[in-house]
Length: 605
Image (cartoon, rainbow, N blue to C red; front, top):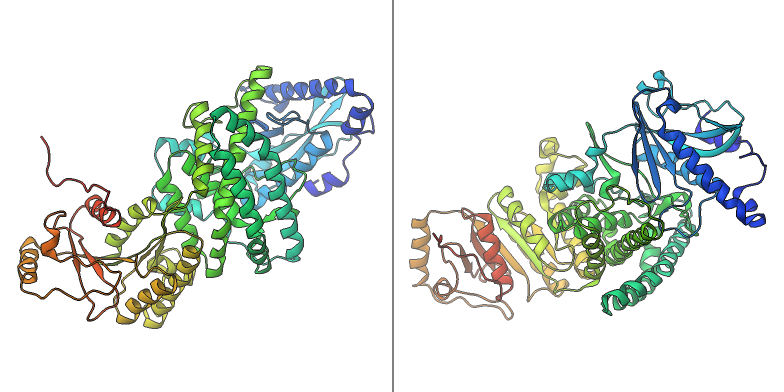
């Protein structure tokens, strides 16, 4: 019997035909009975004999769940009294939430989620139907529920996986690199067309309102403790932003940009298997406004992932996930979601802070032990403050910049862009758009080697740069800085860049970087020649620095600005690509912000 049938033919629970919620209203004292009953279930699941095994059962806890690792399987039990929750989950609620998780889990990790089975009571004994040996070699198999004894709880059966391969553990061992952040970004769905978008967006906006209602008391308490008003001010600003962006959220749903989301895309719920990453523990909480079929805004999942990376101090990785996801979006209009990205980050960061604070309070009141892994990467206070800081940072504005990187090889450009983007603009840094990645997304392939021969046509690359410009417009309009990385090797492409800057009001702050490689002898000749050239004319708003004027405050061998006004509307800053990328980065940051101190050339002994 599969999960669907088990929901339809579930027999009466306990020794009565009445649910826990009904009995609790009539007999409040009986609630202790149900709490003790789950303790009995926990003891049953902790015993090897319950699974016909001799080896001990490993146990792991989270605020909402208990995991029992026995043999080849993992048994997941929803706590009746989840830590930090005021009201207990009834048996019917636990069954409904567990059933939803199995159905959703099979979408994200079909080889891990097997079935939902009941724990039954026969007299004073508890029993359950464990998976058979044959089911160990099959994926998403079903388990027979033939017994009709009274059901006292429900357990999710998963194929056992290595908990040390959870991404929160891996991230603490080594910070994810650029390619690994691309794999994380691929976990976020790009969205798809849905039926009755008005119904789904109404449910989604109800969920946002509910989150604000639930978080307001937490903000008040945290604000009193910290004796600061900044968090409360951010909360008020976020509420105002939701009111302003309701129409934008509605448009996203109408355009088919909503889709099924995970809702709980945190590092601890990402598992590394031999053939890639999988997501477990989709969001199926007991909120009043349950998303219809878990349809929502994919930028909510993106915000969850970005916010957790940021709170852990992985600011560079947060930017890379952000940029990878936006690069692979086929529909440029999907980037209108950037208007609400900071709102989602704020809500998720505060929700994490609320859960941690509530769990700490519950532990202090009841003496319960803290679930392992909850404070992975720091102490209780540092993790809590990390989430609060993330909530504040998400709404902070910064000067918006448009930066183009041209010349050199694609590797040289990418190395500079991926280091410059996290330090530019508002959280999580500038949106880094790569022409190569845009071309891969256009053809829906993963590697340059897989591109068809037709991809080398000029018309294709003209389309690639137009798509980059469209995405840049949406990002700049939402207040995010943008870094465009590409060849820009034709007058048309350079003119397109100039037009983009003018249309977005960035013509006076466009920073165009051109990488070049040459020997010191060639560079000295360029310096000597520049002394005999007339000072170039410069358009209003563009800063042109001649090589002679730069000698006094920057490294002439690393940074030159050359006026191309007679040929090009954009003025390019030349960077020596043979220099270390860290030195290039420091010099560019000094050009963007004069208060930035470039790294010294000398070596101190």
